[in-house]
Image (cartoon, rainbow, N blue to C red; front, side, top):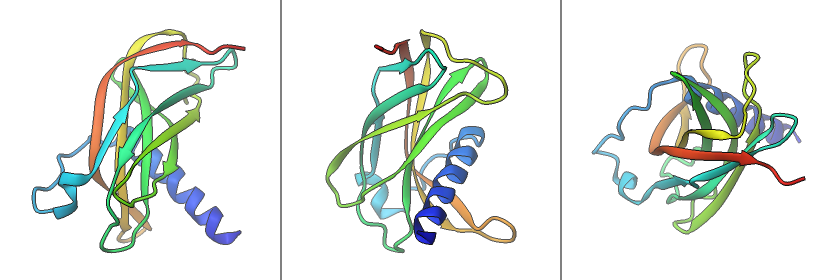
Length: 152
């Protein structure tokens, strides 16, 4: 149970960090970078209660250092990215689907509209100081998103 809580906390922390941090380019020296991909679907949904659902695909190979890998997603409103959940990735070289659910923070409410989506595949490396884990960006995808009303 403790491992699940730690992993869930790491996913939430990574999603929060990735939602507000600029997306740096992947270092060319990372040999796994060429096989790591993430995509977000061009459509997502928003429920009446404001819960946003985003989805897509990812592929990653097993990280050499055994660190966890997460898929985080966000929607862009103005110049601010709002994190919409995170998923622990299975890194076996195969293509997998991901689905994240969440609500916008800071009193913002998602509405059916055209916006932007950002999906990020990140490895959680050992941090320094007060940061126990630091995300290392493996792949990102950013494009327009048609956020439609969820079917009841």
